[in-house]
Length: 396
Image (cartoon, rainbow, N blue to C red; front, top):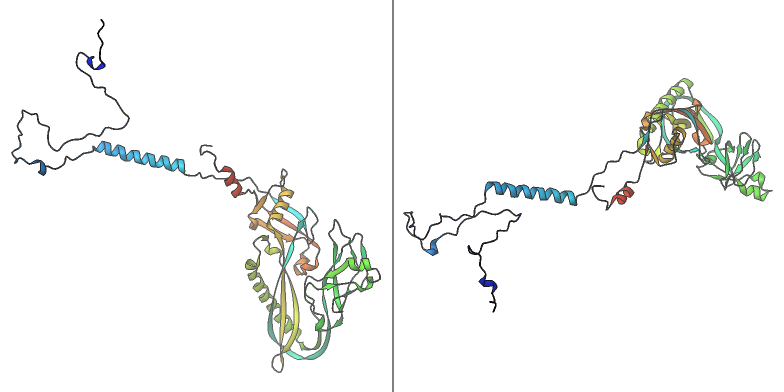
């Protein structure tokens, strides 16, 4: 009969061997406080024998090499966590173009599609001086100004010299020269400017800006009467009835010149703070006009003269101006969003220098030249770019 064996009965010849398992973790070496003794050896120490209750617990020592290894490991783990959890810094170098400007352009108050438009910013200041008077005289003067005449229907309309304009209160003004009012285009009213003067003298005709006028002579044609109207972009001035001082021409001229220079500088100093943040202006595009206000008595033989300086400058929307220049100077431009840098590198000049002493609001358009090397930079949406990159692996 075969003998049955139990697993416990099977033993290797040399006794059971222990299996050694190696791990990746470092092994910590431990040492006791005293050397290990065999049972037959007597303790060599001459110190008195200590009882079990008085023995200190064995202290554990870590080698310097192991400690350095652990510190290095923590540092590596920290950098790895920072790398995996942190974001990425992306530097974008947008396309740009540096045109060599040397060309003439036209700007329009009411710009057609594809043309450059502008707005007029107006600042004014008044001042006074004392000059010697030689007497007084009776004066009657009519107010003057400029209007823009509009037509909201197709087809042109001619208005002859001295055509009447009437405001809501019944005051009458007349145009100084005949004009042709253009018809509307694609729903945009046609317009033309005209100089006007008051039908009667007096300060009552010094009307505020944005006064609306009708054409009384067109009342017989209701449709035409409703289609044509006028507005003044700047106030009417100069109307006066009364006595004015007779002043020495030489003294008056010197006083006015000095006052004009003072007022001019005052207005130029205001430009930086008055400039809208979304607009471009050129200092060389600034125009000045001056108006003499009624003088008043100053003592027995002196008079106080008053002068008003009016600064006007065209403003260009930054985005529109950059797009216009890109269209005119970049052959491959496809209408992408651009901005204009180094604006100070551009020199602005009116082709007609007389504009510098003209009421800019009275002009429907003007020509100017630009010279210099600004920079046109293609722009992009930073927020959208960041959103598009969210979730993409860092290595990509």
